[in-house]
Length: 226
Image (tube, rainbow, N blue to C red):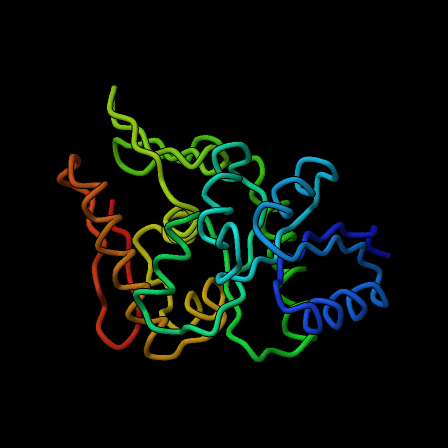
């Protein structure tokens, strides 16, 4: 039996927030509901939640700003964004502000719960990956840092997760559909465009070792060669 999971829910629509809160509480969750970003930030410090579920558009402090501030204090706390937006650039912006996942409104409670458990399981599984060697780089998944000699680059959560999966299948094909569903929740067009953006970012950060390539195997996926 799973332990009680503490969820910080930041949602400025009172009726929707109450529905989500009550639904989660019937499924062994403890839920702290905030109606704006400032209130959510105070609740975060007072209650040490296991996961954050943040609406993007909120008064006083939006979800992206709140996530960015919390990320400066806690690099590993899972964050799910709730948004009416699904364009690739909006999804990328959410991930760059520290988000691990996003759900487009309207969403089902079953989908939210599955994603909460999946994120928490992933964090637990990867907690001890501190020194993954990728060519002449050292990738610290826990700290989300990529090191090359004295050059140290901070990675976003999405970059870290994608690089982790690539590194676990070095010189093998990482299936495109699999990783999209695993990290983005769906393998639709917008998510595929979003992943392409992150692949480009990783290529730039791995450029100092000429023996490292992230190859696009058309129709199948990506391969990290090192």
